[in-house]
Length: 320
Image (tube, rainbow, N blue to C red; front, top):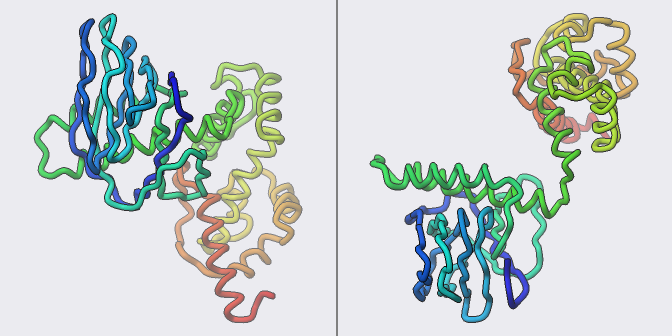
């Protein structure tokens, strides 16, 4: 919780890992107050674990760090205690340096797809505190261990910062509880797409009724479970058509369509090409292996292959 000036944000470019400096777990007894400290190029991130710690940033902003909250002191920032702790309090703290570019702004930034940026608000209440606290605890363990180099700490610190950014992004994008559940369902379907799935089996796995599952999925995605199942299997078929020399019949079987005629009709209806014409349009063969890891992001692989082939075709004058 904050008193004073409006919240602001630090945006860091992390095309390369940050440089971890140090981490600690501080336990404050009643009467303790944070000493004045002037930061240089380093950034400090504090995770509230227990109690209430009053802190003043840059001689003007006052914050109260509670359990599940994060406070960040940006490079060259100043921090001091705003008042003594009245009861026992605990927090993690860690410092890092980022050698690329960074920006401090009062405007909530927008993260583009495949961004190499992290965003640290001055103060935030974590939506998923367990994830970040577990990582901070791991960083504490690794940071005080014996390592051949600083790489383990650097990468773990970077992952922790990316996790904090994702927590902030989920809140900023207003991802609802239903969307979160539907994303879990979609991921489970994708990872288990090689199974003979029915809506009843999915509902049983997530301990839901079929009716509730269908309504939740429809509300969050605008589509149906069956429609998403078909999409996952069609993505698999497209991938196999692009990367193997399997026959169309074999592609249907390896994509878990039991009815070849249904597969053919659905493929043409969705892709607007027959399977054979699709294969001819994107004829480059990258692999020759019909086995697909169920956890592999097939849709993304198909998108990239199609993109490369379209560029080649345009270069050769085959597409307008």
